Image (tube, rainbow, N blue to C red; front, side, top):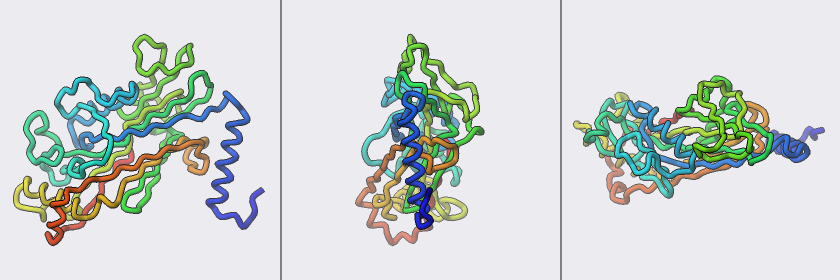
Length: 299
């Protein structure tokens, strides 16, 4: 039993230990999955191409590809994983300003002419070991993400669907082995809007996404008289804000019990750093409006 003097965190640690001991005691009946987090820059959620991009992202996560399709097709649906620091100009969302942009360029040419900027996505691969009987599900997924010292926790549940766009499940076939997207393998895909409590052997998620937006109303109006000026000045404001000193941290948990972070049986984290352009710090006296961070619970 717990000592009454235990803090809440100490109790949570005890609960975690109990679940881990439970996992160890039941052998192959309960397995500890592996988690990989892959960051990418994709279209903002206002993009007409975002669902096609997410479908490509799931395919890349399924096959451990860094790009999909390969070779690059040269349009907003192309998925490419990103390693190393992120340029903040590549995660500006201009939806609130109602003007088109792509990777920090206002009024881009086709095929990017209809885009409303970009966002940083955290793609997730969760795999149970081969030849085990353990299962995972969307409803046992939790994500903690922190930016500027503010932490959020997202819990997933049965209302989240295996839709083949944001979420994909895989059940291993008779060989009880993950075949990594091999068309000759016997894996069974779960992508027909099954509910989030459906248990699977492997889970893929295009992930939470983050982008920068202005904090003024109406958005972008104080940053210039043309869209090109507004975007350029806002990018300068993001860089001058010192965002490069505040990395984004994402931590993914697989839970034993839905909605209970204390029951985390395993987790993995990823940290994103930014690379502001040094020349923008000269613009600190611009009279900046407040910066905003836009966060989406699901991709």
